[in-house]
Length: 121
Picture 1: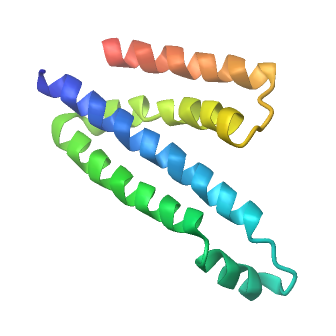
Picture 2 (picture 1 turned 45 degrees about the vertical axis):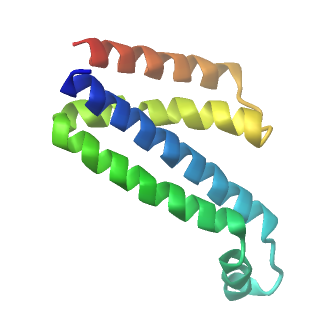
């Protein structure tokens, strides 16, 4: 595997972990509803496993992102990283059962097309 493809793989893994982290944070926030203000909410969030999962996902994301930047120009890596929007839309629809409108799917498709064009250049 050439170094450019390896860098693109690292970016893809980084944004996949970032997407899972975002969804874990969302799950944590929704499951820790507190009625005693911000401090009570923060206290309840601290004990959520999904919060720990989100933090771990972001740590792995940072590791893969750093590996990718060793192999790719940041301008390319950042553009390819936009595929994270695609992952979040798909995963939130599947995992959180969120409604994704037709307009959003069109936007996701345009982002994906742009990422493919950037990756091919």
